[in-house]
Image (cartoon, rainbow, N blue to C red):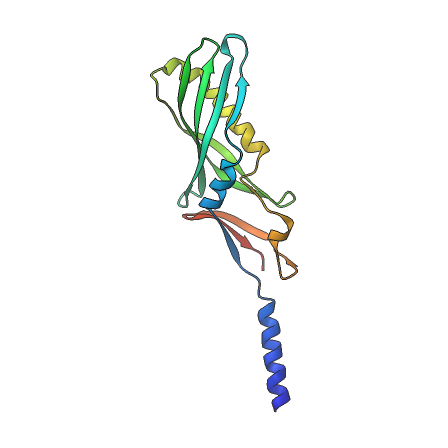
Length: 178
């Protein structure tokens, strides 16, 4: 009887040891901290009279669980070839795409949500819009929101495979295959 009880306890403990987590939430705080390390970012855009020097800074993410979208906002400052200085806020939102091969999470289907300037230069802002959009789209395509390190997707020696990714109020939730 005692042997059966010990064997039952051992089997139960062994079964518990192989229970894998079902999900992981990557928090807004962690993502914003990683983004802050990559900014400010400056580029020259356009040519000739349409040449601009643009700097993006102070990135921040926000989450819309209802729409399953992530908003990405940055402050911008721009100097045009005509020596007009402009600064303001630029925000886009997009859905999420997980690339299993790269272990990386990207923003896709990006659309412009906000473009506001602190100065009243509507014509200049209209000229900057495509440059800012391209600059941020290029950044999004080249830089994932998050890339998992190899050891982050293993649990007690077992590989975790991501099945679904969705937006929740506190961050981004990764659900694992069972």
